[in-house]
Image (cartoon, rainbow, N blue to C red; front, side):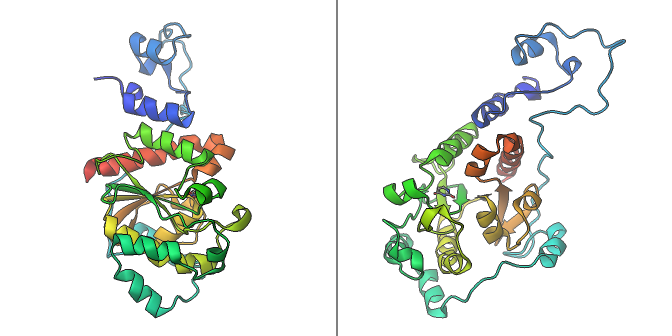
Length: 294
Ligand code: URA
């Protein structure tokens, strides 16, 4: 049994995230483990006389291991988060016609996709090359939710195919997951909160989110994932109902109608802010811990 720091799944994830430094007290490892982690470093000196770090910073340290998911009433944040969510101003949600809600709620998978591809409910419908419905296994155990298609996604009709998508693929691979395949345990389903590209990659606007959310909600109902991974502010806010910033939503227990939601940073943000990759790794650990318990 390897030392936890040498767990191959952990090392693969760190590597995929570009976080290779393991900053640990050397005397916590035996010589073989130390050599495996830091081949350029010699054996640890005897502990006596060596200054012990009061608190050892680990560049890759998960902020916390996941606690068991709390399952409050359907669609309601876990109790610990309810007060914060209630205190936070909820994102403005423009009204969506009841008729549209009813219609979408009743659609099966293929009609839902056709409905999405023909949708002109907001201004984005007239600007896109194509709507980007989603990719992956329709009964996936894990469903990943992003923000909105960018230029590449709009051109190819598939979510996360640009640079951020490559990082996402690497992160998934580090967890033994992939976007294509026949096995619903290892193949995820990937969708966005909104299905059409906002011009110039601007943020989605409240009316666009409001028109698209029923489609995402129906996708989640049909896929019935065991775990939702919300990447970035818009996905996190849509799935938690909170308008707090992402940094305050991650590493907390949420659920979407009984399905645990893990919140993490958007891969595009991680490409711009690599120092937060370690936090994203902690979020993936949380997701894996939850999956192991389900
Ligand atoms: N960013 C997203 O959130 N989704 C995509 O599909 C591509 C980039």
